[in-house]
Each structure stands twice: as structure tokens, then as C-alpha cells.
Image (spheres, helix red, strand yellow):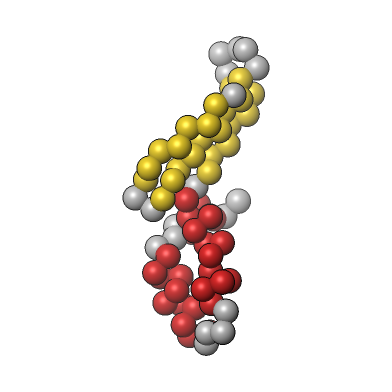
Length: 69
């Protein structure tokens, strides 16, 4: 098994690969940076108005396709 991090424009993009000894990997997991960057939103939004949350999401520069799991 191996974990390989790659620096991307939005943070660390990680690939976790598990081999079973054949030519195909047994498991492949991709760790997108936007999913983990969004985890900071509740802390950032605490005590703020709802209208401010839109600006907070924009400042995180997330990709919604990475978050939809």
C-alpha cells in the first residue's frame, strides 16, 4: 500500500493505493483538497450572518464536484 500526496492549486491532493499483488489495485482512494478545506466552514461561520457564509464559501474556493461523495 502507498499514499502519495501531490501539491495542487487548492491544497494537497492525495492518492491511497492498496495492491493485492495482481496487475490491478485492490483499492484506490482519492483525497481531494476541497472536501477537507470545507471542513473549516463551520468554525469560520460561527457567529456570522447567513449572508456572510456565501462569501466564506467563495473564499475557500471549493470545487463542488470534489465534495459530492
